Length: 244
Length: 227
Image 1 (cartoon, one colour):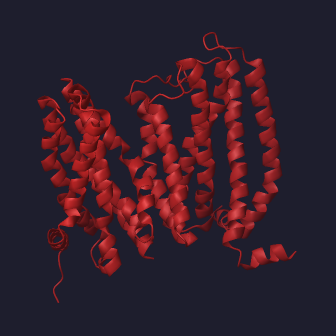
Image 2 (cartoon, helix red, strand yellow):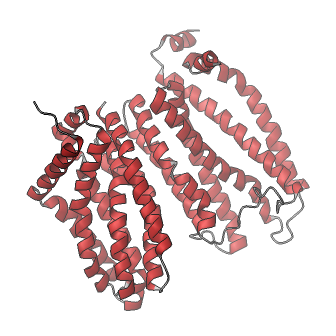
Image 3 (cartoon, one colour):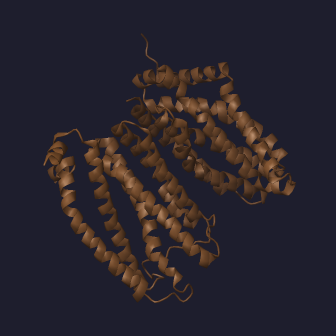
């Protein structure tokens, strides 16, 4: 097990494995995305209050989940980077940041589009929206710090520390719903005993969430492969690869 | 050669930083003047309506305090980084987080305390109700050390960069948000005659959390910056 883990951590091995997995991941992603979208946009009934506008949750909610999830992944990779100096963790940490920032941005934009017909305004300064905006700034800070430091191995360590510090903000974002009474509707999915969302809406939502997860891994692999090639451009395995 | 105990090292470092600050007065005069200036700008910008000013006074004072703290952050490590004494500190036998805490404490004494002293005057000028002024002092007393502690992480990460100042605000300001929310919330609540012990306790919790954790992160970041 440890050997396997160790092997996966080596850049050339990861490069090969990731390349092999990517077509599979892409097809799984497409299947999940299409069924999720079909279920969400066609099969699910319109909401009795919100009509068809609510359908944006099939994009909005998974993006918001991913925006939090990716930050936690980054903080985890940050710990691995600081403690074990594992190259692959550094690369995953760096490559996750732009993807996470994009999901955060997507969540903000879709939320804003939904807010206009529902709340009558594009933006309200409520706790969750504000926290999501701050999360976007945290992501941008990570990207900015990484860009500002020349030596990329040093940059990875700096970003790792920043990600660990920033993860303190994740619970604040999550519990802000309870801390401040706000316009934003409370969570409807995680109440397992009696979900206040019907299964015909829940199922496509979960499918979309899975699709987004797979997409994240797919995009991550792509970025990691590029980053690895860039970082290891002087090493033997990259030379061999390009020599072919 | 006699070795310093940890508490002696802490006190020597604190005293050294304070002496440096006293000899170089601009270091603590600048943030203070900036704080007063920013607050002066608000009545000019939004209009000198007493009700309006009294209403937004907690926010103004806290935003100004945040910006002033951020402006002064660079001085925690910059000059020590430039003249190499930071490297000597990192090589000392004492645990770096404790030494970091001494430097941050000195920074707070030099920049936080002046804000604390001048804020009642500004609160009065903005027409903040008497009931809220005590709470304002309390939040500044509890809140500004958090700003110095959390800010020290950002400075430590960027001290080696040629243009660290620009990125520093992007790193640090989002982390200041909880302090801002609870501090201005407490003052606003007090002005409305509510019990604000919950917000004060939250601020205290943030303070103790940042005292115990942020020196570790700062020390790690400094090691990274010196490598």
